[in-house]
Image (cartoon, rainbow, N blue to C red; front, top):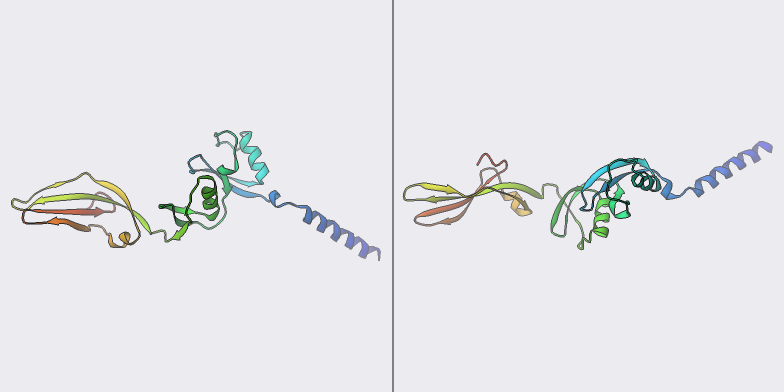
Length: 181
């Protein structure tokens, strides 16, 4: 009888201790961001209170933006996806980061999860050819992001005809490295 009472007492103490633990006491890895939303560094194995203390007293080392507020850190856990939010393409962001950016940086529209090849950067230039003598000239090279269906139509060496008349041919050329056209 005594041993049963002792076991019940131990179980009661363990249950009491477990039920008194707060969610905030759990330790996570935290991503610190700057005032533009750029990732600065990760602090791991800290509760939220420990994170705030170590950043604000300088022992975490890299945050120099004054007092750390809830708009400048988030839990760095979760699967990374690519997103379209407010007409901007965001590469490899977790849902935690999106929630923080929407709350603190006033992103208004819903985030749409997209394939990470949805947007791609391409070099392009305009080539103007004067047909009677074959002379040609190039415009300056631009580096631009294309998204959606356009990315499926682009490939290395692609040329899109802008104008083709009796004396001139103007095309836009695309390159994925800016060297080979």
